Structure formats: structure tokens, C-alpha cells
Figure (cartoon, helix red, strand yellow):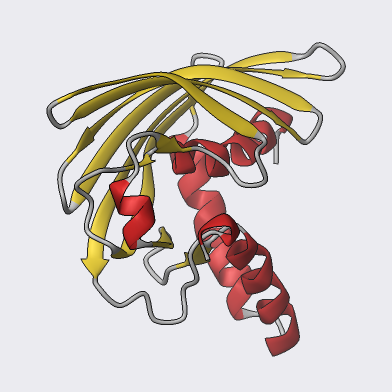
Length: 188
């Protein structure tokens, strides 16, 4: 996988959580899908879709123990890989009522400049993760059963390598029962 796609893949989980913004969301199971992703001006959406399909195939060929380890890693981030290729996350009632975006785990990201106008929210964020600093802005359109988000970010590695990333994503409400999908660790 080319380095720029690896960087984008590292950034996607951070940006996906940027869209989990209340209030007004229904608590329960939600499906999260990246609709479009551009890295350094190049649309890599098709490559990420292909990588997602390859990941699904690889998981099907894993031993039960390997699948369990992979599922455990996703679960640490409050997500599960759905059969559709999207991620599934559990939104708790407390998360659904929040006035600010939920951007990351373990305090690696902070949101600021949050503004809300009706069902639209805009925000800025700074993340420090995996020896990388990411700064960006985002906007979300929020209804009780759907959230569409666009984020524009710049990443800089500890070595000074910079990349620009734009992500458009969508969350859809699935059902009230999260089943075996656990909420992010800080919301349990």
C-alpha cells in the first residue's frame, strides 16, 4: 500500500469520530462509511474501497483467533467492521446529547471553535497521534438518523512530512440495540 494511503488510513478513524456529534442523535447502533477521501489533491476513494474489500477477504481467511484479535483492536476504538464494509459504532444516550463533536479516544484530539446553527455544526480540531499532528476543520449536517460530515485536515509527521486530507463521510442510524458493539471506552 502506498505511503500516502497508509497515512490516510491512519487518519480515517480520527476523522470518523469527528462526525459523532449530538445533540439530537438517536442512541443505538450506527453505520459509518467514508464516501470520499482526497489525499494531497488525489482522490483515493476507490483505492480505499478496494483495500476495504481486501481486508474483508483477509478476515474471512483468518483463523478464529486472528479474527478475534482484529475485532478486539476495532472494539478498543468503539467500532466493529460490518459485513457491508462500513464500520459500526454504538452511540450511548450521553454521546447523543453532547454539544461538541467526539473526536478521539484517550484525549489525543481536542475540538475547538464549535458552532451550531440548527442542524449544522462546524468545528476545528487538533490531534496528536502516532507521532503525527493533525489540524483541521469540519462541518456536519445532523438529523436524528443521519450525519454527513466533511473534514479538511493537514497532517505533519515527526519528521516534517506534510499531507492534506479531505474526507466526506456519512453515518446512518441502524437500530436502537447495539448488540455486541460496545461504545468507545470513555463512554462505557
